[in-house]
Image (tube, rainbow, N blue to C red; front, side, top):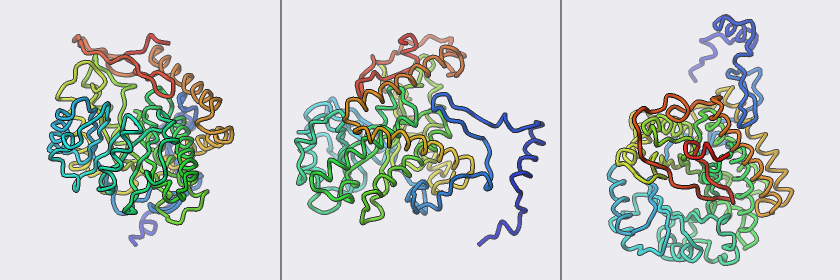
Length: 448
């Protein structure tokens, strides 16, 4: 033990507060109190052991707020490829692997020739995830690819968009014959976040969906350990730095609470596998290079929060004209954070920060309260619950737009310091998820 407490004096909360007042030249510390109108929570920018309400233990210990990683904070760098042509998608994947990706995520839009799609990809060395477009394709990939390589392949079937899949998939099609269980079913918090939801609402959606998956899987004959191993969380990343760090940590804690209520036999079943994807809500194509800074801080918050995989999407991925620079920088940002900034060296680096721990607790408490209420009302597939969630998101969406319109929130290049050089690129029209349009502030400012 280093014995830092024996070397440096320990200050009380009162002494710490008085020193802050002196340094800030303030009579009180109210200026360090914050209220987030999107999350509808208040929090302080400072903390002390005497005022902290949260004790999260160490990494690897329940309640798993600090995650299961104990010696490092490793993550995979994901290249996300939407497959429209198998040969072209294969070339894109090989190029990404040569430029630093160590995981490929294929979103499939049609029937595919997998011998062509996976040609030259050495799947024993990297991880490949497939987002199938149909239940039939899910079954084919599970049988021909995942069963033969369960450790390095995943299937991310979204059973919110494909609810009828529960009736079409049997227990024998879920469990791997080798015993090593792959992620097969995706909780798509990312797409839910893209509709304009808050971090808290995203957690609630993820918990409701994940819990419903557990119930359905156990109804098919799986035990809680097998069911938990099947589920993967794809989460969005917003630009609210500390909120995003706390969101990931809160999700890990609350998912352990959900799984733990079913008394799993194996400790690892309490953990949740998380991939974080940057989105388009706050991105700009009229001033494109401002996105690089947004993507960097978003990636930092996700990595510090303790995700397993990160995908920095090119900032123009949802536009008519895509630039090579955007794709290259999307891969480079996580690489720089790992190879030059060493973000992978320390497990849960924010653990022990009293203000961050309290923020995590505040978000977890608010999320759990709403989750418990909606779960009791019937869960994510109940029409009334879904309608209530959509109403909450719509209100948040309107707040986001009004913040930009009124100048209460500044987005460089969008409502402040706009680019004098005209850019011709445009975002694609809105798509729908959970019966809600996706939100891109630059594109949709006149919508509401």
